[in-house]
Length: 428
Image (cartoon, rainbow, N blue to C red):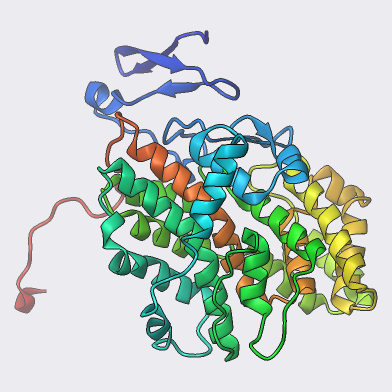
Protein backbone atom coordinates (compact mmCIF):
# COMPACT_ATOMS: atom_id res chain seq x y z
CA UNK A 1 0.00 0.00 0.00
CA UNK A 2 1.14 3.53 -0.75
CA UNK A 3 1.52 6.10 1.98
CA UNK A 4 -1.45 8.48 2.43
CA UNK A 5 -1.06 11.96 0.94
CA UNK A 6 -1.98 15.17 2.71
CA UNK A 7 -2.64 18.48 0.99
CA UNK A 8 -2.63 21.81 2.78
CA UNK A 9 -4.94 24.44 1.24
CA UNK A 10 -4.95 27.71 3.23
CA UNK A 11 -5.73 26.57 6.79
CA UNK A 12 -7.36 23.35 5.65
CA UNK A 13 -5.60 19.99 5.65
CA UNK A 14 -6.96 17.31 3.34
CA UNK A 15 -6.12 13.63 3.57
CA UNK A 16 -6.27 12.26 0.05
CA UNK A 17 -6.74 8.63 -0.93
CA UNK A 18 -3.96 6.93 -2.86
CA UNK A 19 -4.89 4.16 -5.30
CA UNK A 20 -2.41 1.52 -6.41
CA UNK A 21 -2.36 -0.14 -9.81
CA UNK A 22 -1.19 -3.67 -10.55
CA UNK A 23 2.07 -2.21 -11.86
CA UNK A 24 3.14 1.35 -12.55
CA UNK A 25 2.70 4.61 -10.63
CA UNK A 26 0.05 4.99 -7.95
CA UNK A 27 -2.46 7.82 -8.26
CA UNK A 28 -3.75 10.45 -5.84
CA UNK A 29 -7.56 10.57 -5.90
CA UNK A 30 -8.55 14.24 -6.17
CA UNK A 31 -12.15 13.68 -7.29
CA UNK A 32 -13.51 15.63 -4.30
CA UNK A 33 -10.87 18.38 -4.33
CA UNK A 34 -13.17 21.05 -5.79
CA UNK A 35 -16.06 20.16 -3.48
CA UNK A 36 -13.81 20.43 -0.42
CA UNK A 37 -11.60 23.39 -1.40
CA UNK A 38 -13.21 25.20 -4.32
CA UNK A 39 -10.00 24.66 -6.31
CA UNK A 40 -9.06 22.69 -9.43
CA UNK A 41 -5.71 21.18 -10.41
CA UNK A 42 -3.81 22.54 -13.42
CA UNK A 43 -2.24 19.95 -15.73
CA UNK A 44 -1.92 21.02 -19.40
CA UNK A 45 -1.98 18.00 -21.67
CA UNK A 46 -3.04 15.82 -18.69
CA UNK A 47 0.53 14.49 -18.52
CA UNK A 48 0.26 13.83 -14.76
CA UNK A 49 -3.42 12.95 -14.64
CA UNK A 50 -5.02 9.50 -14.80
CA UNK A 51 -8.32 10.05 -16.61
CA UNK A 52 -9.64 6.54 -16.04
CA UNK A 53 -8.96 3.09 -14.62
CA UNK A 54 -8.12 0.51 -17.28
CA UNK A 55 -7.05 -3.12 -17.55
CA UNK A 56 -6.12 -3.06 -21.25
CA UNK A 57 -2.65 -1.63 -21.93
CA UNK A 58 0.36 -0.76 -19.78
CA UNK A 59 3.33 1.37 -20.80
CA UNK A 60 6.56 2.03 -18.93
CA UNK A 61 8.23 4.68 -21.02
CA UNK A 62 11.43 4.80 -18.97
CA UNK A 63 12.05 1.06 -19.34
CA UNK A 64 10.64 0.70 -22.86
CA UNK A 65 7.83 -1.69 -21.88
CA UNK A 66 4.48 -2.16 -23.66
CA UNK A 67 2.00 -4.79 -22.47
CA UNK A 68 -1.38 -5.75 -23.92
CA UNK A 69 -3.41 -7.30 -21.10
CA UNK A 70 -0.09 -8.20 -19.46
CA UNK A 71 1.52 -9.77 -22.54
CA UNK A 72 4.76 -8.15 -23.84
CA UNK A 73 4.29 -6.65 -27.29
CA UNK A 74 7.32 -8.46 -28.72
CA UNK A 75 5.86 -11.87 -27.81
CA UNK A 76 2.50 -11.06 -29.40
CA UNK A 77 4.11 -9.69 -32.57
CA UNK A 78 6.52 -12.60 -32.87
CA UNK A 79 4.15 -15.48 -32.14
CA UNK A 80 0.58 -14.25 -32.59
CA UNK A 81 -1.50 -12.63 -35.31
CA UNK A 82 -3.63 -9.51 -35.46
CA UNK A 83 -7.06 -11.09 -34.97
CA UNK A 84 -5.77 -13.03 -31.96
CA UNK A 85 -4.54 -9.70 -30.57
CA UNK A 86 -7.96 -8.18 -31.27
CA UNK A 87 -9.60 -10.93 -29.23
CA UNK A 88 -7.12 -10.38 -26.41
CA UNK A 89 -7.75 -6.63 -26.26
CA UNK A 90 -11.52 -7.05 -26.40
CA UNK A 91 -11.97 -9.94 -23.97
CA UNK A 92 -8.89 -9.88 -21.76
CA UNK A 93 -7.51 -13.33 -22.54
CA UNK A 94 -5.94 -15.06 -25.52
CA UNK A 95 -8.51 -17.27 -27.31
CA UNK A 96 -8.48 -21.05 -27.17
CA UNK A 97 -8.73 -22.84 -30.55
CA UNK A 98 -12.55 -22.90 -30.57
CA UNK A 99 -12.81 -19.23 -29.54
CA UNK A 100 -10.25 -18.24 -32.13
CA UNK A 101 -12.09 -20.07 -34.93
CA UNK A 102 -15.40 -18.52 -33.90
CA UNK A 103 -13.97 -15.00 -33.63
CA UNK A 104 -12.20 -15.21 -36.99
CA UNK A 105 -15.42 -16.47 -38.58
CA UNK A 106 -17.49 -13.61 -37.14
CA UNK A 107 -15.02 -10.96 -38.30
CA UNK A 108 -14.65 -12.50 -41.77
CA UNK A 109 -18.42 -12.65 -42.31
CA UNK A 110 -18.77 -8.92 -41.56
CA UNK A 111 -16.15 -7.62 -44.01
CA UNK A 112 -18.57 -6.53 -46.75
CA UNK A 113 -20.10 -3.06 -46.52
CA UNK A 114 -23.56 -1.98 -47.63
CA UNK A 115 -23.66 -1.65 -51.41
CA UNK A 116 -25.03 1.89 -51.17
CA UNK A 117 -21.72 2.98 -49.63
CA UNK A 118 -20.25 2.65 -53.13
CA UNK A 119 -22.33 5.68 -54.12
CA UNK A 120 -21.39 7.44 -50.88
CA UNK A 121 -17.74 7.38 -51.97
CA UNK A 122 -18.55 8.98 -55.31
CA UNK A 123 -19.38 12.22 -53.49
CA UNK A 124 -15.71 12.80 -52.67
CA UNK A 125 -13.19 14.47 -54.91
CA UNK A 126 -10.65 12.09 -56.37
CA UNK A 127 -7.80 13.95 -54.65
CA UNK A 128 -9.42 13.84 -51.20
CA UNK A 129 -7.04 12.67 -48.47
CA UNK A 130 -7.90 9.07 -47.47
CA UNK A 131 -8.24 10.16 -43.83
CA UNK A 132 -10.95 12.67 -44.71
CA UNK A 133 -12.77 9.86 -46.50
CA UNK A 134 -12.27 7.55 -43.49
CA UNK A 135 -13.64 10.10 -41.00
CA UNK A 136 -16.77 10.47 -43.10
CA UNK A 137 -17.29 6.81 -44.02
CA UNK A 138 -16.74 5.43 -40.51
CA UNK A 139 -19.17 7.99 -39.10
CA UNK A 140 -21.63 7.06 -41.85
CA UNK A 141 -21.68 3.42 -40.72
CA UNK A 142 -24.18 4.46 -38.05
CA UNK A 143 -26.56 5.47 -40.85
CA UNK A 144 -26.21 2.09 -42.56
CA UNK A 145 -26.13 -0.11 -39.43
CA UNK A 146 -28.44 1.65 -36.99
CA UNK A 147 -29.48 -1.73 -35.58
CA UNK A 148 -26.23 -1.75 -33.55
CA UNK A 149 -26.10 1.75 -32.07
CA UNK A 150 -27.87 1.16 -28.74
CA UNK A 151 -24.96 1.32 -26.31
CA UNK A 152 -27.11 0.00 -23.45
CA UNK A 153 -27.61 -3.30 -25.29
CA UNK A 154 -24.64 -5.63 -24.74
CA UNK A 155 -25.45 -7.63 -27.87
CA UNK A 156 -25.58 -4.50 -30.03
CA UNK A 157 -22.24 -3.35 -28.59
CA UNK A 158 -20.73 -6.68 -29.60
CA UNK A 159 -22.18 -6.52 -33.12
CA UNK A 160 -20.96 -2.95 -33.59
CA UNK A 161 -17.49 -4.00 -32.42
CA UNK A 162 -17.35 -6.89 -34.90
CA UNK A 163 -18.59 -4.68 -37.71
CA UNK A 164 -15.97 -2.01 -37.19
CA UNK A 165 -13.04 -4.42 -36.91
CA UNK A 166 -14.26 -6.23 -40.03
CA UNK A 167 -15.34 -3.30 -42.20
CA UNK A 168 -12.53 -0.85 -41.52
CA UNK A 169 -10.09 -2.66 -43.87
CA UNK A 170 -12.76 -2.68 -46.58
CA UNK A 171 -13.38 1.06 -46.18
CA UNK A 172 -9.64 1.83 -46.10
CA UNK A 173 -9.07 -0.21 -49.27
CA UNK A 174 -12.02 1.54 -50.93
CA UNK A 175 -10.56 4.93 -50.00
CA UNK A 176 -7.26 3.92 -51.61
CA UNK A 177 -8.85 2.49 -54.76
CA UNK A 178 -11.03 5.56 -55.16
CA UNK A 179 -8.02 7.88 -54.91
CA UNK A 180 -6.21 6.11 -57.77
CA UNK A 181 -9.27 5.63 -59.96
CA UNK A 182 -9.41 1.84 -59.79
CA UNK A 183 -12.54 -0.26 -59.18
CA UNK A 184 -13.32 -1.43 -55.66
CA UNK A 185 -12.35 -5.02 -54.86
CA UNK A 186 -14.75 -7.06 -52.75
CA UNK A 187 -13.39 -8.95 -49.71
CA UNK A 188 -12.71 -12.65 -50.05
CA UNK A 189 -13.65 -14.92 -47.16
CA UNK A 190 -11.02 -17.62 -47.75
CA UNK A 191 -8.18 -15.21 -47.01
CA UNK A 192 -6.90 -14.19 -43.58
CA UNK A 193 -7.55 -10.65 -42.34
CA UNK A 194 -4.35 -8.98 -43.54
CA UNK A 195 -4.02 -10.91 -46.80
CA UNK A 196 -7.59 -9.97 -47.60
CA UNK A 197 -6.76 -6.30 -47.04
CA UNK A 198 -3.69 -6.45 -49.29
CA UNK A 199 -5.76 -8.05 -52.02
CA UNK A 200 -8.48 -5.38 -51.74
CA UNK A 201 -5.79 -2.71 -52.09
CA UNK A 202 -3.65 -4.11 -54.88
CA UNK A 203 -5.72 -6.56 -56.94
CA UNK A 204 -7.23 -5.48 -60.27
CA UNK A 205 -9.99 -7.26 -62.25
CA UNK A 206 -7.71 -7.94 -65.20
CA UNK A 207 -5.18 -10.07 -63.32
CA UNK A 208 -5.05 -12.76 -60.69
CA UNK A 209 -3.52 -11.38 -57.46
CA UNK A 210 -1.41 -13.60 -55.26
CA UNK A 211 -0.63 -12.36 -51.75
CA UNK A 212 3.05 -12.35 -50.80
CA UNK A 213 3.15 -14.13 -47.39
CA UNK A 214 6.21 -12.16 -46.24
CA UNK A 215 4.44 -8.85 -46.90
CA UNK A 216 1.21 -10.09 -45.35
CA UNK A 217 3.01 -11.20 -42.20
CA UNK A 218 4.89 -7.89 -42.01
CA UNK A 219 1.70 -5.85 -42.33
CA UNK A 220 -0.04 -8.08 -39.79
CA UNK A 221 2.81 -7.35 -37.38
CA UNK A 222 2.45 -3.61 -38.05
CA UNK A 223 -1.23 -3.91 -37.15
CA UNK A 224 -0.38 -5.69 -33.88
CA UNK A 225 2.17 -3.03 -32.92
CA UNK A 226 -0.37 -0.24 -33.50
CA UNK A 227 -3.43 -1.94 -32.00
CA UNK A 228 -3.48 0.04 -28.75
CA UNK A 229 -1.27 2.46 -26.84
CA UNK A 230 -2.98 3.35 -23.59
CA UNK A 231 -4.61 6.80 -23.10
CA UNK A 232 -3.12 8.64 -26.07
CA UNK A 233 -4.84 11.59 -27.77
CA UNK A 234 -7.12 9.60 -30.10
CA UNK A 235 -8.04 7.01 -27.46
CA UNK A 236 -8.85 9.77 -24.99
CA UNK A 237 -10.97 11.36 -27.71
CA UNK A 238 -12.90 8.12 -28.22
CA UNK A 239 -13.48 7.80 -24.47
CA UNK A 240 -14.56 11.44 -24.15
CA UNK A 241 -16.97 11.14 -27.08
CA UNK A 242 -18.29 7.87 -25.69
CA UNK A 243 -18.86 9.37 -22.25
CA UNK A 244 -21.63 11.49 -23.76
CA UNK A 245 -23.50 8.39 -24.88
CA UNK A 246 -22.64 8.85 -28.57
CA UNK A 247 -23.02 5.75 -30.75
CA UNK A 248 -19.88 3.62 -31.24
CA UNK A 249 -19.43 4.48 -34.92
CA UNK A 250 -19.43 8.21 -34.11
CA UNK A 251 -16.92 7.64 -31.29
CA UNK A 252 -14.51 5.76 -33.55
CA UNK A 253 -14.90 8.43 -36.27
CA UNK A 254 -13.84 10.99 -33.63
CA UNK A 255 -10.78 8.86 -32.92
CA UNK A 256 -9.94 8.71 -36.63
CA UNK A 257 -10.16 12.51 -36.85
CA UNK A 258 -7.83 12.98 -33.87
CA UNK A 259 -5.36 10.41 -35.20
CA UNK A 260 -5.02 12.41 -38.40
CA UNK A 261 -2.92 15.06 -36.62
CA UNK A 262 0.77 15.07 -37.66
CA UNK A 263 1.86 14.97 -34.02
CA UNK A 264 -0.07 11.72 -33.53
CA UNK A 265 -0.96 9.25 -36.28
CA UNK A 266 0.47 11.40 -39.05
CA UNK A 267 3.99 11.08 -37.68
CA UNK A 268 4.96 8.23 -40.03
CA UNK A 269 3.82 10.27 -43.02
CA UNK A 270 5.79 13.24 -41.68
CA UNK A 271 8.88 11.03 -41.22
CA UNK A 272 8.78 9.92 -44.84
CA UNK A 273 8.32 13.50 -46.05
CA UNK A 274 11.41 14.42 -44.04
CA UNK A 275 13.38 11.68 -45.80
CA UNK A 276 12.19 13.09 -49.13
CA UNK A 277 13.31 16.57 -48.07
CA UNK A 278 16.79 15.29 -47.21
CA UNK A 279 16.84 13.47 -50.54
CA UNK A 280 20.32 11.93 -50.67
CA UNK A 281 22.84 10.50 -48.23
CA UNK A 282 25.40 13.26 -48.87
CA UNK A 283 22.97 15.87 -47.47
CA UNK A 284 22.50 14.06 -44.15
CA UNK A 285 25.35 15.86 -42.27
CA UNK A 286 23.74 19.21 -43.10
CA UNK A 287 20.37 18.11 -41.70
CA UNK A 288 21.96 16.49 -38.64
CA UNK A 289 23.67 19.83 -37.90
CA UNK A 290 20.33 21.60 -38.29
CA UNK A 291 18.67 19.14 -35.92
CA UNK A 292 21.33 19.85 -33.29
CA UNK A 293 20.96 23.63 -33.68
CA UNK A 294 18.49 24.90 -31.06
CA UNK A 295 17.80 27.99 -33.13
CA UNK A 296 16.84 26.03 -36.23
CA UNK A 297 13.15 24.99 -36.45
CA UNK A 298 14.03 21.79 -38.36
CA UNK A 299 13.36 18.60 -36.41
CA UNK A 300 14.14 15.01 -37.30
CA UNK A 301 10.76 13.25 -37.54
CA UNK A 302 10.57 9.62 -36.50
CA UNK A 303 13.07 9.94 -33.64
CA UNK A 304 12.26 9.97 -29.92
CA UNK A 305 8.81 9.57 -28.38
CA UNK A 306 6.52 11.50 -26.03
CA UNK A 307 6.21 8.51 -23.67
CA UNK A 308 9.25 6.31 -24.33
CA UNK A 309 12.48 7.64 -22.88
CA UNK A 310 14.12 4.39 -23.85
CA UNK A 311 14.06 2.51 -27.15
CA UNK A 312 10.44 2.14 -28.24
CA UNK A 313 9.83 -1.64 -27.88
CA UNK A 314 7.70 -1.55 -31.03
CA UNK A 315 10.56 0.02 -33.00
CA UNK A 316 12.85 -2.96 -32.29
CA UNK A 317 10.30 -5.31 -33.86
CA UNK A 318 9.58 -2.86 -36.66
CA UNK A 319 13.28 -2.55 -37.47
CA UNK A 320 13.51 -6.31 -38.05
CA UNK A 321 10.29 -6.29 -40.07
CA UNK A 322 11.52 -3.43 -42.26
CA UNK A 323 14.67 -5.29 -43.23
CA UNK A 324 12.66 -8.48 -43.93
CA UNK A 325 10.42 -6.58 -46.33
CA UNK A 326 13.31 -4.81 -48.09
CA UNK A 327 15.15 -8.13 -48.53
CA UNK A 328 12.01 -9.85 -49.83
CA UNK A 329 11.39 -7.12 -52.40
CA UNK A 330 15.05 -6.86 -53.32
CA UNK A 331 15.11 -3.10 -52.79
CA UNK A 332 18.73 -2.02 -52.67
CA UNK A 333 19.02 1.15 -54.73
CA UNK A 334 16.21 3.36 -53.46
CA UNK A 335 17.74 6.78 -52.49
CA UNK A 336 15.04 7.35 -49.88
CA UNK A 337 15.76 4.06 -48.17
CA UNK A 338 19.49 4.74 -48.36
CA UNK A 339 18.88 7.98 -46.47
CA UNK A 340 16.73 6.16 -43.90
CA UNK A 341 19.31 3.45 -43.26
CA UNK A 342 22.12 5.98 -42.86
CA UNK A 343 20.02 8.07 -40.48
CA UNK A 344 19.29 4.92 -38.50
CA UNK A 345 23.01 4.15 -38.25
CA UNK A 346 23.83 7.67 -37.08
CA UNK A 347 21.02 7.78 -34.53
CA UNK A 348 22.21 4.54 -32.95
CA UNK A 349 25.86 5.63 -32.76
CA UNK A 350 25.98 9.44 -32.46
CA UNK A 351 26.47 10.58 -28.84
CA UNK A 352 24.01 13.48 -29.33
CA UNK A 353 21.16 11.12 -30.18
CA UNK A 354 22.14 8.58 -27.53
CA UNK A 355 22.38 11.17 -24.72
CA UNK A 356 19.01 12.68 -25.64
CA UNK A 357 17.54 9.20 -26.21
CA UNK A 358 16.42 10.12 -29.71
CA UNK A 359 16.16 6.55 -30.91
CA UNK A 360 14.35 5.72 -34.17
CA UNK A 361 10.70 5.14 -33.26
CA UNK A 362 8.00 3.00 -34.82
CA UNK A 363 6.90 5.82 -37.14
CA UNK A 364 10.36 5.96 -38.69
CA UNK A 365 10.38 2.27 -39.61
CA UNK A 366 6.71 1.83 -40.47
CA UNK A 367 6.82 4.64 -43.02
CA UNK A 368 9.76 3.02 -44.81
CA UNK A 369 8.09 -0.40 -44.75
CA UNK A 370 4.71 0.79 -46.02
CA UNK A 371 6.36 2.73 -48.84
CA UNK A 372 8.30 -0.37 -49.86
CA UNK A 373 5.04 -2.35 -49.93
CA UNK A 374 3.57 0.12 -52.39
CA UNK A 375 1.35 2.28 -50.18
CA UNK A 376 1.42 6.04 -50.87
CA UNK A 377 2.22 8.29 -47.91
CA UNK A 378 -1.38 9.54 -47.85
CA UNK A 379 -2.48 6.02 -46.82
CA UNK A 380 -0.10 5.65 -43.87
CA UNK A 381 -2.38 7.20 -41.25
CA UNK A 382 -5.39 5.31 -42.61
CA UNK A 383 -3.49 2.06 -42.02
CA UNK A 384 -2.65 3.24 -38.50
CA UNK A 385 -6.36 3.91 -37.91
CA UNK A 386 -7.24 0.46 -39.23
CA UNK A 387 -4.93 -1.15 -36.68
CA UNK A 388 -5.95 1.13 -33.81
CA UNK A 389 -9.69 0.52 -34.32
CA UNK A 390 -9.68 -2.52 -32.04
CA UNK A 391 -7.88 -0.59 -29.30
CA UNK A 392 -10.41 2.22 -29.51
CA UNK A 393 -13.27 -0.28 -29.37
CA UNK A 394 -11.77 -2.12 -26.39
CA UNK A 395 -11.27 1.17 -24.53
CA UNK A 396 -14.78 2.38 -25.45
CA UNK A 397 -16.30 -0.93 -24.36
CA UNK A 398 -14.42 -0.84 -21.04
CA UNK A 399 -15.61 2.72 -20.42
CA UNK A 400 -19.26 1.93 -21.22
CA UNK A 401 -19.21 -1.06 -18.86
CA UNK A 402 -17.58 0.91 -16.01
CA UNK A 403 -20.31 1.67 -13.41
CA UNK A 404 -18.31 4.68 -12.19
CA UNK A 405 -18.15 6.30 -15.62
CA UNK A 406 -19.21 9.95 -15.89
CA UNK A 407 -19.41 12.29 -18.83
CA UNK A 408 -16.00 13.87 -19.44
CA UNK A 409 -15.79 17.49 -18.31
CA UNK A 410 -12.25 18.91 -17.98
CA UNK A 411 -11.94 22.16 -16.02
CA UNK A 412 -9.95 25.29 -16.84
CA UNK A 413 -7.97 28.15 -15.39
CA UNK A 414 -9.88 31.20 -16.65
CA UNK A 415 -7.69 34.21 -17.48
CA UNK A 416 -10.13 36.26 -19.57
CA UNK A 417 -11.94 39.48 -18.74
CA UNK A 418 -13.83 39.62 -15.43
CA UNK A 419 -17.58 40.27 -15.47
CA UNK A 420 -18.47 43.52 -17.21
CA UNK A 421 -21.61 45.24 -18.50
CA UNK A 422 -22.78 45.40 -22.08
CA UNK A 423 -22.26 48.79 -23.75
CA UNK A 424 -24.63 49.86 -26.59
CA UNK A 425 -23.02 50.28 -30.01
CA UNK A 426 -23.30 54.09 -30.12
CA UNK A 427 -21.49 54.42 -26.77
CA UNK A 428 -18.42 52.30 -27.62
